[in-house]
Every structure is written in C-alpha cells, then in structure tokens.
Amino acid sequence: MCRVLDAARKAGIKTSIDVVSEESERYAKIVTPALKYTDYCGINELEASRTTGIPVRDESNRLLEQNLPVICQKLMDMGVGKWVILHMPELACGMERGGEYIIEEAWKIPDGFKKSSVGAGDAFMSGVLYGAYNGWSLEESIRVAGAVAAYSLSGAGASDALKELPRLLEEMESFQ
Image 1 (cartoon, one colour):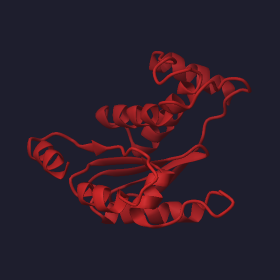
Image 2 (cartoon, helix red, strand yellow):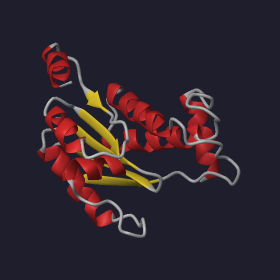
Image 3 (cartoon, helix red, strand yellow):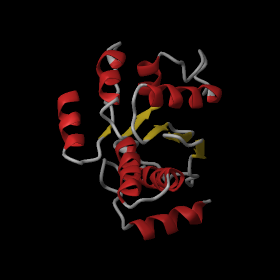
Image 4 (tube, one colour):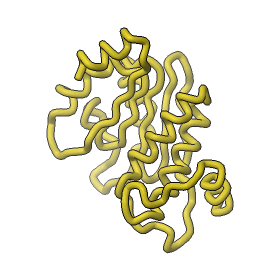
C-alpha cells in the first residue's frame, strides 16, 4: 500500500486513505506507515482510536470529545500531508496541516428518515474528496460531507439515496 501511495504522489496525484473497520489490533501496523504517503486521511472514530491508541469512547460508549483534537494532531504528526478527518454518528472533525482543529455537529434528520447506515462512511468521504478536488476549505468539505452521509441514510443500500448535490443540500437544510 505504501509503495502505491508513494508512486501516486511522485506522479503528482493527491492521495487519500479510508480504512475498513475490523476487530483487530492491525491498525497501527498497517495504517501508520501509509500515513506519510497520504494527503487526505478520513477515518471513523474506531479506526482512529485503534491507529493512535487514544480512546474515543469511555466504557459506557460516551464520546470523549476532548480526545478528538489530540487524535487529529497525532495522525498529522504521523505524516498526513494535508487533512485529517474523523467521522462518527455524532459529529465530524478535522485538522488541516498548519491549521486549526474544526468540528461540525451531525446534520439533523427527521424521524423515520433513516433506512440503513450501509455506505454512510463512504458517502462522507466522497463529500470530503469532492470538496478537496474543488478547492473548498476543510470546514466546507466536512459540512457538505456530513450532509451527503446523512442523506445516504435514507437509502436501503450504499447508493440508493443518490441525488444531485444542490438538491440534496437544499433538502438537508430544510431539516435543520
């Protein structure tokens, strides 16, 4: 993986990683070496905790929000080139190299809107990468990514809730 990411960067291609969640201790061994070849690292709270060794939730599954900027900074220190983004049901947060930590609360959705969470993390990352590709700020990219992920919950599968971005944002704004 590191060789592929390194070759892509040497060819002038921006790189990103998104990790598959699993119950193992392999994260630090597999993810950490790849970070120095990664421009955009977008991972969920479980993956971030397993990679850094910093807890994200306590024993009662309560989010330890104070640890999120520490995790972002540690991932940045491990070599991420541009953005670190963490996503979870309650919120998304991130850090830009040389920039400040930002946090965005999850979008509100009406009762009965959610059909499935399949693909929500992938939908989130598609929004982040769309923003990066279009030169948006990290904050705007995370805001739009959150809307895309929240809207994806209305589909039964990973891509059932696709819609043009302006219409999706308009609908999501109406729920707020």
